[in-house]
Length: 112
Length: 118
Image (cartoon, chains in turn blue, orange):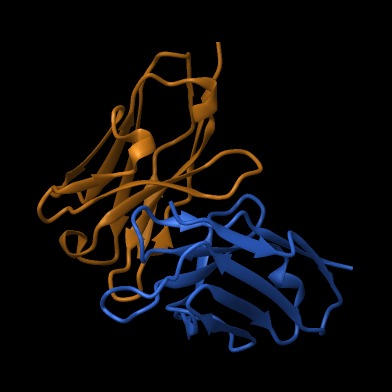
């Protein structure tokens, strides 16, 4: 199975400041159709995950533009330009290029 | 899009559990349903997928021998049946709609806590 390794595991941030999370894959996530099925999800305590970004850099419906994704091949990054209080929680990267779908171990974002 | 799951379950080791997921707000037949579980303090783990249109399933190897996923298209409901439960199966179980264009899943159910304890 594809292993997704996220860094850092915990990220204390100041409100209004940027935050960045890295996700590294054990294999290239470029699919045979040319697309890269790497997504980012956000999970608040007691809630299900919510899709933020799909195919590396596409924001899902309703996701604020302070969230952005980048990367290629095996290395990907999620950036929050200015962290707001509602952004706390755990962020996961996920891949659907290779069977089975797998998820990173999560990065906890909390306010300093 | 709404995915509403059945309530929490408490089971003994060796028992089975069946979780339901009722979909609304979209055409049920068009999108696959994934099942994902999350053990306490862990990241999500993909269990498998079912096509409501064809009934075709695809299970993760870890669950191949003891999971069955089905759908009832007349009620737009998906089901996940997990057998031979152990304490390691204690987790929140989610259904999530397939997102073939984006890859992966997009909308998630609220989750169903399954606790396995003697």
